[in-house]
Length: 457
Ligand code: PLP
Image (tube, rainbow, N blue to C red; front, top):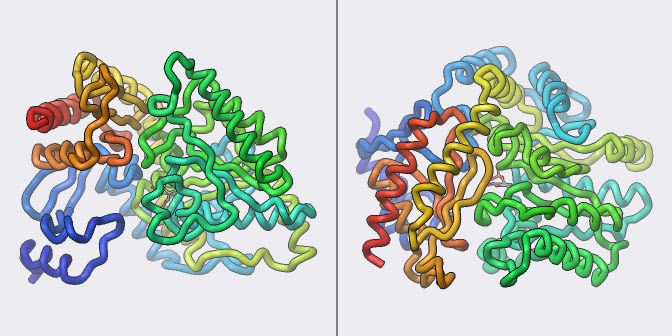
């Protein structure tokens, strides 16, 4: 007999250290236990039916409960439940997946490295940056520049890349050799009267100054999300990546595009790099590669980097890096089934179309709202900026925790939205299967929840 929900909550509280959870607040509220999902809907053990307007953690692009993926998983587990891919061992699903991914990845990627998530994907690329520069005789070119407000993972190295101070302060991070340049958040950091393009140029000049301060011969790579996710759904201001890429090129600095959120349709294109004309040397993808049905990531490198790695084997022997679950046959089969759905259901075009509708609805609904200062994002990725008073640009007192208050209210009203407390914003990244009618439901519930909370402030 399954335990009663009440018992499950108690057992949960007694036994689990939850990720990214405030232990004291959790002790008061307890867990919410999600027990089933179909399409864009979830059900918890308290009997609530919820629209998941975040797609889990920005990953369930094809929606929950897809039989095509369940069947692919079953078949793969029956055919070959596991075998490793070290020392040149391989399996059919990972080979088929690699060929398919290289055909759609931007900027002519040449090889793919599989792992289990975004953190270990980015971690692997950091090591490849070091390995590459060692081999080309520039071992001092080790520093990696990331941006404040970015999110790149939580391993020791990738939490260092992450530009959110809460991920550093209690862990003595960042590690040596990880530097941060200023964020592309024009809304917060643009000067009065400064155009977006001038702001972008200023950011590029600041990046260049940082590189010169440390010495270009010590800087190996720059990493950026096309649209910052967890840091606030920050879209790049006009000209931003063009200006930044002038600098990275000038100093021979590799460009890593972290497409962990943007990849596989989120912005209405296959990859975010396409939207902003980013020409990366390396790319990390994860999340929507399997729509969250299996922990799996794919990181890409160009032919130029691959050539050097190949030469490295002659010099160093094996490329001594890899994970037990790299290229897992079930994960690869799940990714193939997931890509089939994205293609067969036309989800990239749907993401562009419904995404535009979503942004229009949010903009119209909140155009005259004193508490909503900005709606930002691209495609099926959006954030609503809350403010005490948008005319005088007054932020809420952080003690009020306005974004979490709104999302708690949303949950009570049947909607999961994601609070981004560091920027007083609420984020949305609904599954790409969301229809326009369902967008209306999301916007209606959100609007009612915002009004309800704002009445108290
Ligand atoms: N990169 C980005 C842009 C992310 O948003 C995330 C996770 O949210 C990661 C990397 C880390 O991925 P994971 O949690 O799978 O390690």
